[in-house]
Image 1 (spheres, rainbow, N blue to C red):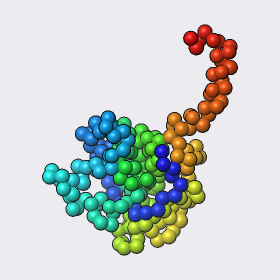
Image 2: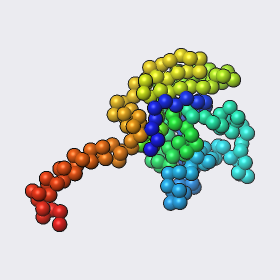
Image 3: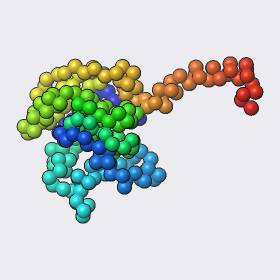
Length: 207
């Protein structure tokens, strides 16, 4: 997966609570996995909020407004990514170009899926998120934020820097671009050495 070191770009406030995985990616798009794998879900991000029955953009949805079409950071309210366990919701966010979601809390499975797909779920207090959203909504030149995972800092639109705390193991995996399988494969030499010794001791178990 793509490494996450530092992401700078437009931040989009979508301060709704309990945005579930079906809102992030409606279930009717899940079957695309058989054709595309993890890719190709970006166009369907927030599809029911983003498009009308005719398939055209809803002009009043924030992702369809010019300042936010290239958003890389999403600000949300409590319990983002709740609902079903579909990993596709994370694929849709990353496929669109969003690399960090900042919310007070996350659905547990969504939170874990995020780290396995190069998306940083960043918990911050709601009051702080609302303050960031207020800066963003002021207008031109006030929508850019930077999340520096290497330095563990968040730079707000007004230049204020906040120190972040990210679980060391998860941070290391994101910086290296490693999902759960990649982390396991780091120890492949040790695994192979153990298997060779075990095969010599118990050859019958490898028949």
